[in-house]
Amino acid sequence: MPDLERKIAGWRQRMAAGGIKTPAVLDELESHLREEMEQQVRAGANPVRAFEAAVRRIGRSDLLKAEFAKIGGRHELRPGRVVGIACGSFAVLFSLWVAPWLLTNPELSLPQRIMGFAAVALTLFSAASWRFSFKYLPVIRSRRARTMAALLCGLATLAWFCVFGNLLSSVIVPRIFQDEDVTGRIFVIGLSLLWAMALAAIFGAIAYGLEEAAHRRMGKDNYV
Amino acid sequence: MIPKELVAASAEALILSLLSRGESYGYAIIQEVRARSDNHLQWTDGMLYPVLHRMENNGWIKSRWVKMENGRKRKYYSLKKDGKTALDEQRNQWLKVHGVLSQLWGEQYA
Image 1: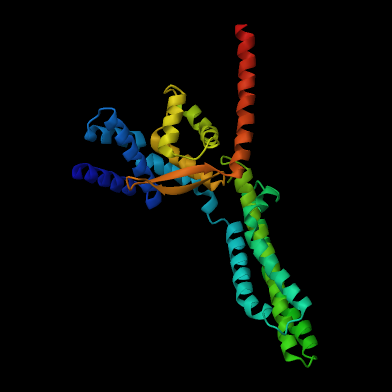
Image 2 (image 1 turned 30 degrees about the vertical axis):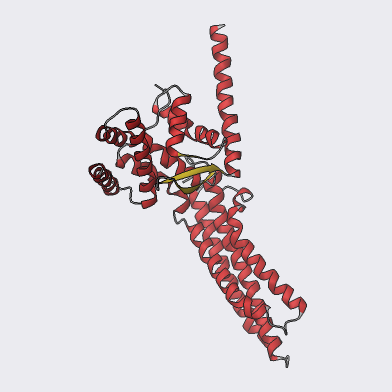
């Protein structure tokens, strides 16, 4: 029935114009609308009446939009999430960039290889910890306190990179440059960088985990 | 008819309970709640979906699109491990409310 299909397309456009913009949500609502229409037609209603009744049952787009807007929470970019994603992405990307050529090098000694793999594993574990760390981290109820905690984690990461940079230039490099083995020096710098990234990933995981702990364990009405 | 505030308050517990019996989709959830309550419990149909999406965001349920024989798609929801925990918590809370009311009404109408 082309006329009915036009009506459904028009309803979909009105919902989109009313603020339901996500295609997946519109698909789901349209699927519901069609099921309801079919049910009413089976019960004896004419298709146009069935369509009108189904539209009424779905409700107004502005009310739906307001309800969907309340979900926000998880995807809202709070400071904890920004710091967590920034630190985690940087650490993971750097580690995955360095690890393949460093850790597969046949000249790497076994202890060095183990140290390198341990650093990469710790980085990946920290980055993935958002899936469960919210269960174990404390719930900070105050949004301001959570923002402060996130900024502290971010600052701690920056401070750590400054400290690490100084260590690299003043301690690590001078010490290893006494060594004649050039390849060995590069290995030490590479492994040190992998461990530096692991710590950055841990700070990021704490920042993200604290926001998730508040979001998931405070309940939808108390989470601010 | 049950007022919409009470319907809204019980929505999560109802959805979690239904999904604990197996995966389902929005339209079927509404129909089942309506049937089991003899039409006393009614949502504005569209309002179910923000609740489902919020529960999915909370990590309680997961969803998948399934293509039907007629070519159309349906989004099926099922319970996750955290959803089972949430269901246990909500069941305890509702049973406490039920217990207090039963006790009071038992005394009142004894």
